[in-house]
Length: 217
Image 1 (spheres, one colour):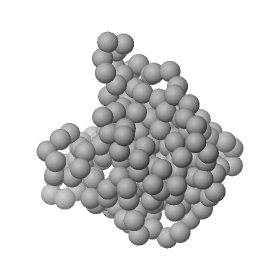
Image 2 (tube, rainbow, N blue to C red; image 1 turned 30 degrees about the vertical axis):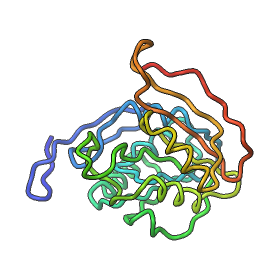
Image 3 (cartoon, rainbow, N blue to C red; image 1 turned 90 degrees about the vertical axis):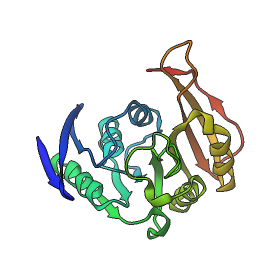
Image 4 (cartoon, one colour; image 1 turned 180 degrees about the vertical axis):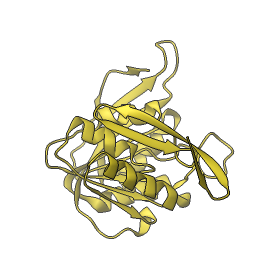
């Protein structure tokens, strides 16, 4: 199935995620193991308000709803095309939610219980495998600051990042007042180095990091 936009044909894909159907095309990040891992890793409780920074076509919001239906869902996405797909994905799965099309650094103040994000792993223009939609050049420091601004006290920020960037990630989280509390490495095989790290931090939390068993994928 194809979809025309911006002078080209966008090949459309679908994936069944439990009771929900996820649709995306070549203008968005594809369904990846890193997002699936984050969707299972983040702490969820009924009635929580969840915000995805850089939500793309809404994959993480669907993954959270699959685990816990009673959530208040919201996303922020700079790219209008991806934001429109996110709205469609929520609507077609009969999920209420708000998708804002804006720069996450300029979003209106909010108070949520959980912020989630699968940011681009490499800086825009680095030549590395970064994929489309680089959050408008937003830095890791700005991402952490935006998460801290949106969270209630003791709220959580869960994200997935490249393993070799772990030192920078932990440093920026603490700088933003987000204390890392849970960490999990993801590897493709026992004899392979980790390719990604999952971290969950608490706003205003006390020091003390739980390192969970590695995930193989």
